[in-house]
Length: 178
Image (cartoon, rainbow, N blue to C red; front, side):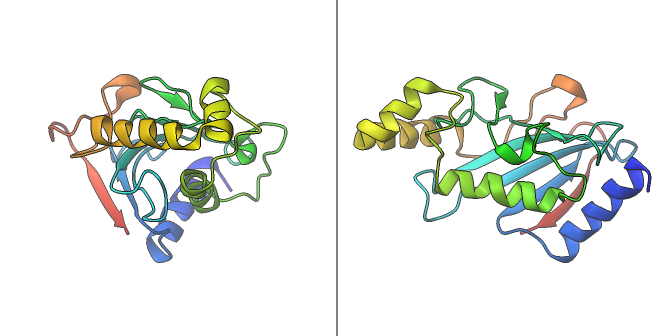
């Protein structure tokens, strides 16, 4: 099965059995390898009330190589870099752990779960992980502040890697999966 056929099948699977609180947008109908994801934070998480943009880029070798997924929305989290395009530390996405049988819906659900249960023993942000383990109230205060500052209102995906902004310019295909 070619990469584009697999990606199309997985998109259809996401539409048939949608993961909770996920919206998938294809910024260009001609590029099925680039997805914009809007993830509404689970109500049981410290990030409740926030909406987070994720950018999914499938490589040409998919499913034999994992997709690259970054947070377009800043987030205060031990497993996500604290910058504009936040890299995610998730064992499923590590090249050594990736299995071609892994489906994108499983990855999206794991990222959603990471908002509920951060993994401070495998951090990208050591200082935030230490704060999570040793000063939980301060961590929660800062995480809530980030939600208020960055994760309220429409998600902004920016213009890097051909991504569309929320201004509505250009052709977009949106698939609601919530």
